[in-house]
Image (spheres, one colour):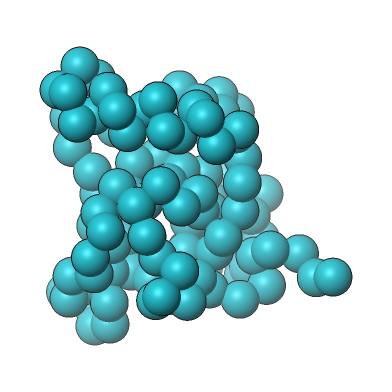
Length: 106
């Protein structure tokens, strides 16, 4: 089985709560690149990205601090071509964070 970040996430798999790693194009597919970020999808639908293609809204963790949200005020639009499926924390952590986001407690 290949590494989970070998292919970008498929549009049908880009659902709320799905864990991802954002790998910018200049990182050459390297999830360990300093600009790569782990997080999860917060939107259930796709939006049209300014740079072309579909995008979803995501929240990201601080680098090196899995489970600690970097973006507490709002989610960030990210193009699907830069998102790869990758679990970085237990799924119950994401479920708890989504609940806090819904309740405006984060």
